[in-house]
Structures are given as C-alpha cells and as structure tokens.
Image 1 (spheres, rainbow, N blue to C red):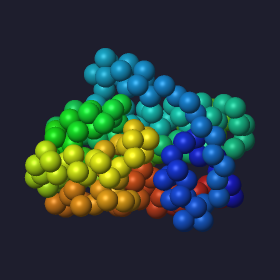
Image 2 (image 1 turned 90 degrees about the vertical axis):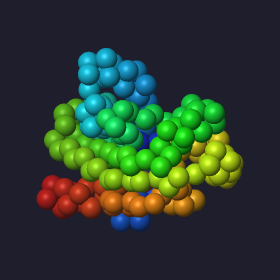
Image 3 (image 1 turned 30 degrees about the horizontal axis):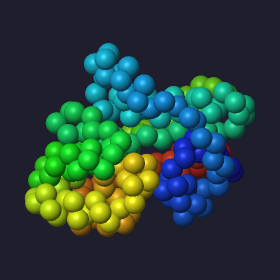
Length: 193
C-alpha cells in the first residue's frame, strides 16, 4: 500500500523508507507561521498547534488527491508551554539554544491521516528532553557545525546528527523526536488495510 506524505521533510521521508512504508511526497505549502499566529491568538498551546498543523497539511493535500491516504505531520518544541519555533536566522537559533540551555522541554510530534479531504486518524507523541548546561561559546561551536539551510529547515537540534551531544537525557522514541512516530503510523496502516 502506498501513501502520500504531505511534507517536504527529507528526514520524515527517510524514516518511512527505512520502515518500508511506500510513499509519494506532495508538499502542502501551508503557511505554518500564519497558522501558528492565528492559533496562538485564539489561545492554543503547542499540542493543539502541532495537531492542527498536521491536519491542515494532510487535508490540503488530500483535497487534491481523492481516494489516497495522505499523511500530514508537524513537530513543535514546548518550553514551559511556550511554543519554540524554527529559527529564521543563525542569531535566532542561538537565542533558542540559550533559552533551552540546561532546561527540560518537550518535543511534540503530531501526525494525521486524511482521505477525500477529511481527517480519518490523528496521533500525537510527546518526548521529554533535558539539555545540558553549555557556555555560549559551546553553543556557537555546535551551531557552526550545521549548514544554515539545514538549521532553518529542521530546527536547532539535529538528533539524527550531532544534536545528541546537546542532551543530558532524552525520554521518547527517536523517530518521533526526528518528526515521525512511525510505529503508530504503521499500526494504523496495518488496521486500515
């Protein structure tokens, strides 16, 4: 069975490929900042924002691909219930790392399947992460290892690469932290068949 992944994330595509989930990629082109700002104005927290974004992406692509099973996904960082967005610059990335430094925070990965323009299943997985205590110099050195395009596309920590060195501990599924709770997705696909 082949699904459509409504995401431009190469990491998410690789996770599905690694678990033998066949998929085509169709990018949703949802304006995530606009959606986040709108939801925050209504008082939505990080979990609701993540769930809504996954659903909006999935439904948008599903509307244009009838009878196909479309997977949307979104991941957000929550620090004391504050949404931490992807950086828009290297300076902002450093500010984010300083904020997360020596702090426990949560990474929420939400996924949604849609068919014929309607959500048919969704799931969110929350992982707990505690960042070590670093000096500003160490944080800058870490950021210097990451290409700007990668940093802006995927966020401040790259758990699949050098990002593991940032953490005192990680409680959660590695695939979910990288953006896709693939075990839950595979369970749903098996039931769907």
